[in-house]
Image (cartoon, rainbow, N blue to C red; front, top):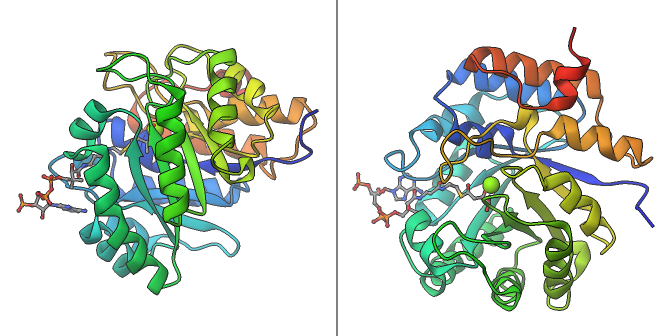
Length: 296
Ligand code: HMG
Ligand code: MG
């Protein structure tokens, strides 16, 4: 019933650190290197967005220029527009991602345009990336709820996911941005999207704000999804719920998957070391329950 193998997409250095107090470039570089050492092969290392909107990511060019590239590891970046793409390519990103939403209000507040305008804006990004042979991933936010609009229709999630896929995204990551989903809803949403986009081209990006992410992932693995996004040490707060936790901790995900006999390629003790090191730099408690349980 479950797959023998799952591909992990590590977003701690981007989705995590964009929502934490700023750490130094050196601390980020150590984190990214430790993630690679732990066996993660897909690492989102930064984002080329307006530094006024997200100051924590302002050093992304330095990160990509200075990171110790490990063979077999893909380092990717968020690029909302052509300017972001140019900066990402110039800095040496291996892969980029465009990010849209299934909610109009969220799209407006996150990238300052409507869903339709965002798709228009992504077309030249896709063309320029293709011309350079750079793979483009797509994100859809608010797939299980929106901080401004509440419930979101699965048909709208499927519509936006299909737009990104048809436009040329090699994979579409479904973001439960505020972590409000529950297992049956999550599985139904993935099933609806899988009618428009091959399930093998989908990824799960479930925030853990309400403690539901692992349960939701387990339910969705039954649909055939084989790619999961997570953030080491559960890095990342939630800007829409003050004091709440944000991303699903990679350590907790790896522990569950290994317990199910699913291969991830990740060395859990090394991953925990990476999470503990960045948590110390941030002066916060490690957000992974597994890391807390396994750290002396
Ligand atoms: P805008 O203000 O509409 O854009 O912002 P603009 O083109 O009018 O430019 C305004 C200013 O930004 C100009 O600078 C541009 O040069 C600059 P100024 O003249 O004022 O000094 N600018 C840029 N600077 C650096 N890099 C760029 C760039 N583009 C413009 N690429 C924009 C539109 C998209 C830029 C803005 O809204 C923005 O940066 N948004 C970022 C939002 C963001 O990063 N959100 C978090 C990531 S998404 C997420 O976390 C969800 C996800 O995890 C999935 C999930 O959980 O659901 C992926
Ligand atoms: Mg996210």
